[in-house]
Image (cartoon, rainbow, N blue to C red; front, side, top):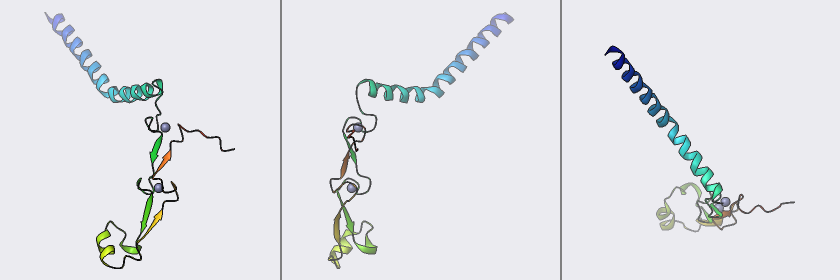
Length: 111
Ligand SMILES: [Zn+2]
Ligand SMILES: [Zn+2]
């Protein structure tokens, strides 16, 4: 009787430890699989095969609004007031395209 209880307790503990192990390592395994799946499918890890990466400098709009001190999403104030100061500059980072070609997908030799 005593031995049976001990055995089932040990078995329960073992299963519990196994489940805990699986729970902890599951996210890591999942991300590892998705990453390897992408590469095995020929998809780009960087852009997911979009071949484009949105410009972080202009938030993908391709232009930067230069409105002096009131350039904080308050377009209405600038527009109602002196909008001659409100200039829209083309983003130099992405050449006003709003996105880059993915460096991983379009490996152009620079030399
Ligand atoms: Zn840009
Ligand atoms: Zn890419």
